[in-house]
Length: 416
Image 1 (cartoon, rainbow, N blue to C red):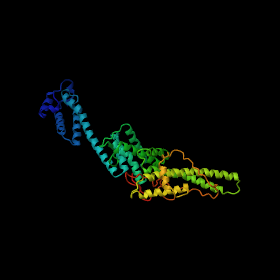
Image 2: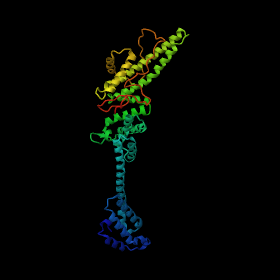
Image 3: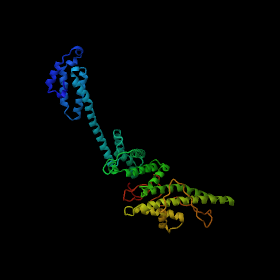
Image 4: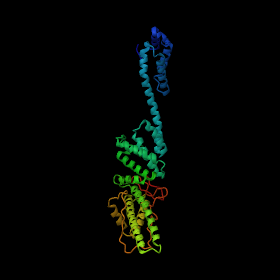
């Protein structure tokens, strides 16, 4: 007998079923004689099979399964059974594909809406589900690797530090192992996070450095990452130099405090000259370290000032940087003249690695430090690159968008 789809009609099928009289061992299977039931299931299947809605497709599968379950031991129906046994997996696979497509569409719709709205909660929730089905989707992985740092920067909120770092690492690992950038122009990512492979690598490294420094407060790990970026494609990123300058500001504070304490102790009476000289020597050493930090601060902020474009949009930020540089310059050299020449000479030199030890700088002194010595100020009074606030964020810790300017700490932070 041919398969059910090659029979000319239900009457032929019914006649075939009647012709198979149960004899021998098949007589024990009463279902084999159930020609009405066989015809009914066949009729139902042929009605359902052409329909494309999911309910009808599932019911067609269930009907075929019922036919096999009831009549699977009927040798005369072998061709029909062989057909169903082959067709059921294929039909189920096709239905599963439809279900998967609908499942993915719902999550991609949610993911895209989250990207457009800059909503990391939605992006991470939908993206994680998508990756269970498409673990190598670079458009999703790259976007998840960047939105955490972008939104942390925009909102001074490090809620997404862990996930941002996690997916930045995932994205970089995928890229290094051959992750595909399949969009036009060799790009990957979604909407504002769509970029080339080289752009993605730089942005992901920055995201890691930024979230490590501010979100995890692990500056020792972040500084080498920032320095690496400053030596390559992000050598003109003012934020990187600003962050490093802020770091030196923080490191300088305890040195200034030690100087203050020792000068106060130096005022004590009744000490012999040897003790006083020892205190004097200690102060001089600390002042040399303080000078070294000042020169590192000047170096970093001068570079931030230099690469910040002189436009109306950047004026407040750039002016703030210049003011801070001037204050630190006066602390260091006790003069106001020659600042522009100093900036030019400084940025012409290689940028110091912030992980290297700060070299103390001792100046020839016309007179000994005395008990009336005034300790160096711990930080500049004002400026766009002032020391970090309690939130850990400073005026220089926001990255300007391409060809736009950063703003000052007293106004909105610059966008990345």
